[in-house]
Length: 269
Image 1 (cartoon, one colour):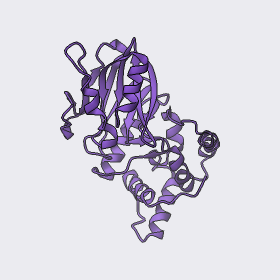
Image 2: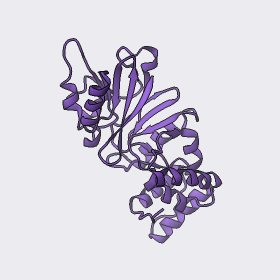
Image 3: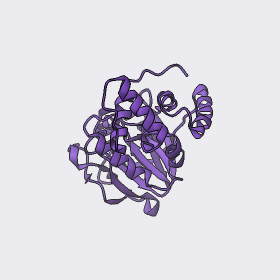
Image 4: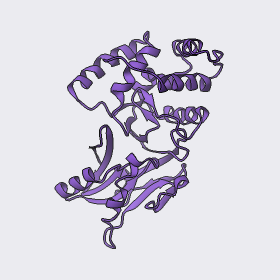
């Protein structure tokens, strides 16, 4: 199975899975990039995987589902919690799905990851994770619907996957996340080394996604709220903003980090 990167809007990715002339796409926020690929490649769209209901992830659904006919059914997998009209295979997490006609390569474990939205899903197969807006490289999604406790539990579930898993998040946000990571954990040598490589990619306009979960575990501060430097930074932020500095649990440290990140104004890198 081949994984293609289709760009959408300013910084979205529509990840596209190809197998023997068949195509499945993840979070098609707009239809144009997918329709262009289908026209150029001759591939046949057979499945759509949705992580959550935000418009920049489902905006292309209507046009793509319109390609369906009796000879070309399209399975749309998505969160049951959001009642997206085009979804014909509603999921809650815990299921194993198989992309139509993909065989064993198209089998994915569905993981419920509430936080960014309450119904958010991630799709995992060995070596590959499509996590939508839950986990970003060096960052995580904002809490539009869920609580810090839910998001920390969701991130912990993803962090428990094998370290060699390639993280296919839905946005190219690494360039925005890097300054905050360095502000929180400047003494992390692995983050410093990764920073050099990422800044080079960013300066050249090269995509930074995907990257391994192992790299995230040692450099993404939102996965590291048990680390002394991260705890100290979160307490310092709370002290400066007049908040509670106790931060006795990883959830509380995570909540402080997410609050700090929401208002953080990064310097130019």
